[in-house]
Length: 498
Ligand code: NAP
Image (cartoon, rainbow, N blue to C red):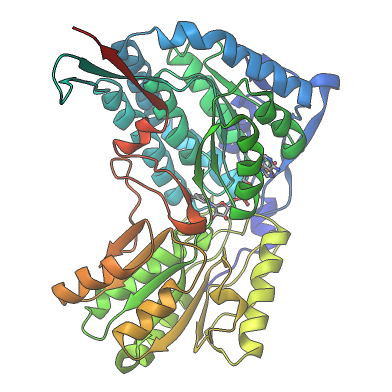
């Protein structure tokens, strides 16, 4: 394994990096205009691979937030009157622009978030696909007409946009978590104010410029960047001017927001944390299981809500699985995401890395064995070495908490009943993964697992055309698929006397 040295990093602000940063807006997008925050306040966006300053971005005040929401409210009526075909055209135009500029957008994302360029390109494609998918959904908003069971009256059922929306996104997928909300909001005819995470606002700001070019009318999508998320968002939520909050982030913050939304009974969509089990039965194809576990664990350096947090392997194949997993993990190249051949970038910040260090120390103190890695990697930047732990006990903190780092936590198991009980022994329920070649077992276990999504013999389930979301404390509602647009539509029933 090779780790970047500080010499590599110092040499690294290339012409392309400078050009891409220069071209990215740094203001607030309100009512179609880029504006400074009150008092010209700004905050710093840092490169997690070096700690260097990338840009200073507008730091919105609660008043700026209120202005953005007013812009969304003012445009709602006009935007809901646009035809589905107009909204389709805007989304397809935005899809085209994202794909055309994939190289620059990927570079920008790697700079602010740290993921390797290949993964950043993958995320731009995934993000753009939400626009293409929801463009077609805009044309398929349906309704119904039916005779009442007793005859006479008729039922007319139609769908209308929910109204102005507040959209809040996390730092780990800075573009896709935004388009997964903005796409269906536009398709449904909703205006919005979007607030990206303070660590990674640049991708969303770049998207704001693209949406303007794509023909999104002024005030339909407003962007507010800020450091004081609670202070800025809470008055907007409590104002009752927005009719919906769609949030992706931690369960802890999601619970706070649900309470705030209760006051005005806002519609909510909550995409929250996960604690995914990945189960490998002894009859699985081990090549497939290793490839799946690597994908489920290492996508985004392990900083994903869908990351395999607990890997359960049946006793007979546990040692071989652990050995092969350690081999695969130790072969990964760690470094700055912009460098050729890098597989694993830095973690998002020192707090994120500290959490991984603490969780690993806790697990080893309780008897887990380190098969590879187990420490921070040389910096600058927030690097952590890909790590495999074997025999992680149920009492370890990482069994119950999101690791959010490149650490595979393996626990051997005996029987199917035992592993299903262990997998479900969590407050979360986003996704589970099962590797087996026994069809009956696959379906039995998939049905028994308490999660909104299951990957059968595959380590990645995300797909814009499929319903993404969790149960239990992993969330409410679904994004993507045809369910995704329904989250932004109200059903209206009109009773007709004949
Ligand atoms: P986070 O701390 O909950 O932050 C998410 C967003 O909420 C950020 O924009 C943040 O702004 C904002 N925020 C924080 N406190 C707020 C408040 N009091 N009021 C309004 N907004 C507030 O989560 P994160 O660390 O960015 O993201 C990681 C988490 O997201 C993990 O738990 C992960 O599992 C989850 N996630 C879930 C999904 C899914 O689809 N289920 C997808 C991706 C990530 P600031 O950045 O300014 O604090």
